[in-house]
Image (cartoon, rainbow, N blue to C red; front, side, top):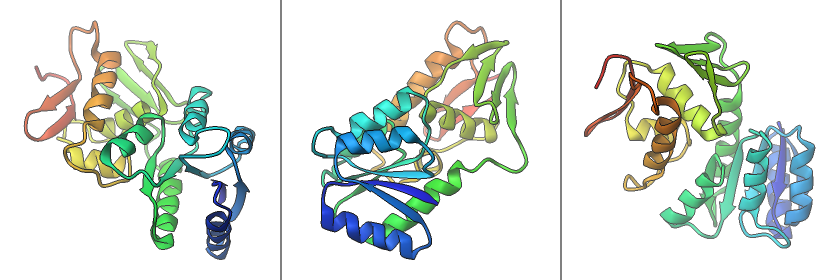
Length: 226
């Protein structure tokens, strides 16, 4: 894999680059926010490891910029800020995973490899349909009743996982582990926030809602529920 490391701590960056190379990956390093933003914009990376607090530009602003231009490269956010709210902020900005410092290099490597695996397209189904809602994994589009619905990368992955398990209850833990690849404090509201936004885009103005909350259990995509 080709991995971009955006980290201003030179010693930590050198250690991380060395570890990634020993694991068989190609690692490139940017030492501040400006260089990191420029490197990310060139594309071609399988995963970006982004320090949150950087000179010149904040790491989360770079992630937001990536998502705004449609760059879906998985991003692992690193930060000395490890509280639940800090992690939620990182995810809301468009990060795919969040790792608090100090971290074990073995865990970071595992997370990077998990992000890369999740990005690879499936070998069987390339699209999902529930009623008049269609998600195409190849063109990365979602339509309902023939009308295209524009989703943010995280919203797309959330809907993709729900539709993959259509008709089944999907728990909060399942979503956190499969959409975010992270074990969160069960009290975090990150799923509620994303589900609310997704429901507004998918079901608003529709006679038959497709996204349902199963009280005390989780969520479900299905026709015919009230």
